[in-house]
Image (cartoon, rainbow, N blue to C red):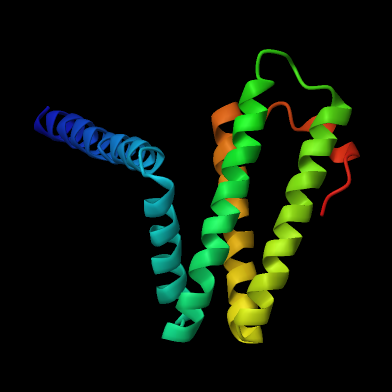
Amino acid sequence: MKKLIIAALLIIGFSSFAQETQPEKKENRGQRERMSPEQRNQALLDRMITELKLDAKQQSKLKPILAEQTAKLQAMRDQRMATNAKELTSEERNAFMQKRREEKAATDAKLKAILTPEQFKKMKDNEAANREKMREARESRQGGEGREDKGNQPQE
């Protein structure tokens, strides 16, 4: 009987400990959303400095590029939110996606001119890893459903 009680207490203790980590993630997400564009730019620059080991010259060149990218993304978000009242057609969605790809390619070209090939490759690897983590998180939230129709769309 003592073993049963101890096992039950251990299970309850482990399950309550495991549940403590999730609210922190939500708090971090809320904090990130409350950041101003300048703070987001600085956070991104700081992360790039540590991950890519940027020198001072590269840092000074990256700041205006990041600011420009943030402004363009915010304008695209605002435009998207303005049309949020209606469901987008596939043509409108494809136009948004194409515009975003073009903006990303232009930004990547500017970054490629500043970063060394090793730094650029590491940045692209980090982006791919982040995309994969976001995809997995999205699938876990959706329970894996709704992904069947995505197989017909071309991937880039």
